[in-house]
Amino acid sequence: MIGFFIKKSFFDGWDNLYLLAALNGIFLLVLLLFFAVPVALGAPMWLIIIAVACAIAVLSIWDVAVSNAMYAIADGKSVHFADIKAAIPRSAKLGLVMGGINIIYGVALTVALPFYLSQKAMWGVFAGGVLFWTMILAMLILQYVPAIFARDGGTLRQIFRTSLYLFVDNPGFSIFLLLWRIVTLAISALTMLLAPGPAGSALASAVAVRLRMKKYRYIKDNPGADRRRIPWNELLLEEKELVGKRTLKGMIFPWKD
Image (cartoon, rainbow, N blue to C red; front, side):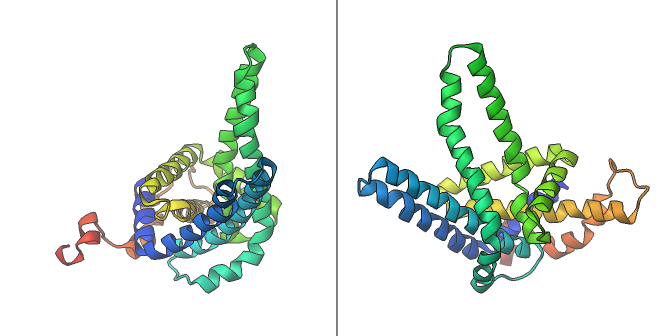
């Protein structure tokens, strides 16, 4: 299943490369307006902090809206900017919640964690370790949230509960997905975050949620099935047909494949 996840994520992103670049361009524009410009103009620190908090909130809303588009792509549908624009209002509530969580992340990473680790006493190291692993655990759970919202909608409680369930039931895959998203963003540094960038990371979560949900549909339809032996080849047959037999050579030189 992981092998097909990689293939589908890659080719879905490749087929929509220009869209990813455009969506990532908006991410960069927000960072430029809310962070780079105030710093370049020599704004006071308190104003820069407020600007950064606003940037995080705006980017979080945009990320949820983009995740709606990425789930549509993972579902084999075409996406237009009008669809993303229409998704922004319904993404605002969850986006603001995620923005608040991201701000807490930022404070924990830049203030709390360095403070605890700078303490020479054992309690500081212990508190820092607890905080660090709590942040990692939260990342493993929250990486599913926007994609689940794009797929099912629902209340905040339902969305976060489903995300928690996905992590608890699939810890190994959740760790792999987080590493994949980190690698995706690291590679994006070569293209100034234009591709695959944050939108590509959102696409990975969308593909992961779409494929994993097939497992639960199968279990629902087959109550006596062994949860440890999911027939992924059978469940992913239709998805594999949609992706087709594609290779890197055929992607770059389609006339030679």
